[in-house]
Length: 388
Image (cartoon, rainbow, N blue to C red; front, side, top):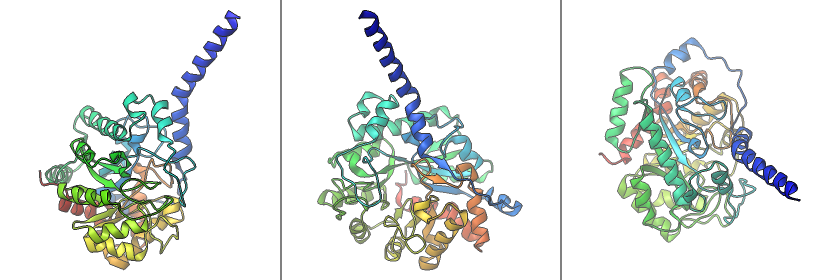
């Protein structure tokens, strides 16, 4: 009997070790995929690409157990690939909760996939039961990466930081790469207005109000009620704008988007997604919503995955960008990859020259390509971030 118990114990230990060692990696490999494109990059596109300041408004890399400074054999973003893709600024989002059976139509708020991921990745115990602590852990991970990067990675918190980043990159080369912290859904406030200060002090400078479910501040496009901003949400919007925190409408319900665009006094972004005019998916923006973002002086970030552009062809990215340009002008469209966000894309961040090529093929001028690839994001950040 003792031998049987010992054997069962060893099996349980082996099973637990297998779970902690392999399950998170396998989960990520099954979610963040590539559907490689056969598009060829011309010498002209390659040459132009190397002169651009490139900014991506949304990547979920901090959710996964990877060293940001090392080239990974999975996923879409790490520092070596950011440098190879000539990315000047990457927005890193904090994902704290996703519902079981996640879908675009309707999700309850009472289940959570990220708890199992936090435990499986052996994150600090404080993150297992707290959404706020999960975001603070993501901020800590990015700070550690910056400290260990020997100047190759630079966290942007102020307009002055952004100016230093732009000046350094204007000298040539692919470093430093800027990093800006964002939040995917303000459920991490845990219903407490004061927690916005905690997140601000941790370095977060952008936030979306909702993710895949309704929360205490706003309804989600994918929630059950799909309501507008709550009274707390209205307070948080004013608090964010007073601090210099960028307001992101991605994933918010159409009612919440309407409320935000009505109340906003500073430029608003849609960090990642598409437009219904080129891809009729409920999470994509209507033309009226695109016009609303433009009226604030903000930008619409176009993603690269199927549900954003109804394709994984780089030309579909360019066509969505062209629609926003034709509707509201070239100053109001940008890149919003959703890399590492459980998406399948035609390239990883090292392959961003595919977007440059697609824009050239679509007839965009070099000046307009510079705006789309990063110039517009730099303008919005300078308008919203605190000066110092």
